[in-house]
Length: 481
Image (cartoon, rainbow, N blue to C red; front, side, top):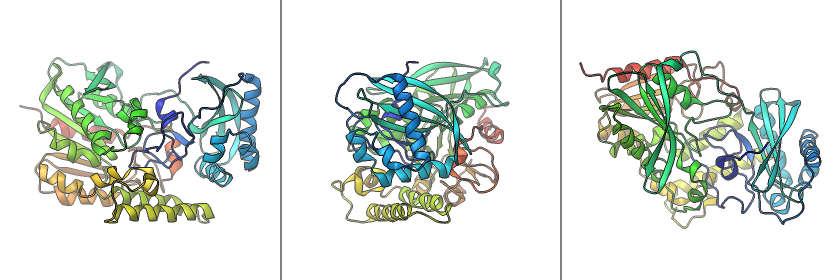
């Protein structure tokens, strides 16, 4: 089987399937080094490293590589990290020392549960690399363990990812009620492929642009086996709302984004969302007086900036949008995740201390453009943090004074009810604003019970129908008599 790795898999590693609010930025370009990083909002990987440029040599036999890949997984299960380490090329050995390997496996089993066995393997060839994907079964969820080999048979990349699953639409999606077509969002030289979902109707339609959370998201905001933006787009189209969704710049132009040391929230999210809004509003099927922008997670955090540049928008929808400084949420999320382990390891304790130091550097008045990214949270450059220093999303939204629907899941530990209340305090006197808390929904607005945990994202589900209906009802009030 010949296939291409997605750009997010090759260029934007993620340490767990848990979603944070920020894009993961690597200090090096793809193919130049092996790197592990922390948590992001989009990638289904539990942990990854970037394939390296190893010395050329004769290709290894596929059966041998399969045996090696299975041996790597067996060594992890046996906690024989030295055996795993010996299969790596030199760059991988540097990027993933023995203590880090143990941390990786603990993260995997903390989320996916204990290893049960495998149901087979498949193979892929990518740019001269051979990838063996072990279809592994864990107690809580299936995972694809992707072991990437160079031409000499050494491990040049390692990925633990949510198992590939086919999308099955939820019952509220009525496929006969809409059509979908490809569309491209153009912003200068950036061209982002997307999907326009159009209800079958003769009259002009209300339309909405979906703006992703952090990380190199695709148009469906794929997270593990889940596609919340596809649920949202096709669910809304089933009840008469046109939807434009698109692949994020950090996915389509991964290398260029990584190389941009001056990246800010504007280049990551805001500018392309504005271009998408203008594209949607200019389509002949769309009512220009009923165009909206919806932001999820980081997209919700960015909505006030987007709103300042889309003055013709009828209103905005904020779903789990952070209202507090992002560095505070990073720290809060890490503390929550580590609190799930009653006996944290020494490495976890050290990681937590390092995050606290990095967050403090962001808040320090001495932070400057020359501060190294590796001294800051998630290896994100100082330009990003300095750009956000005086940004207060609820205050900025109140200044816009535009109709806004703010939605929040009660089981969301990444953005919490505290953020919802800050939006409410700032916008409660603005006409057309509404606020809803769904006690049983998580960060993806999917239903669950009890305390939310990272492995929730590895379980296939769908956005709750009530959320789709509430957004549709709110948009419907803008219909002209």
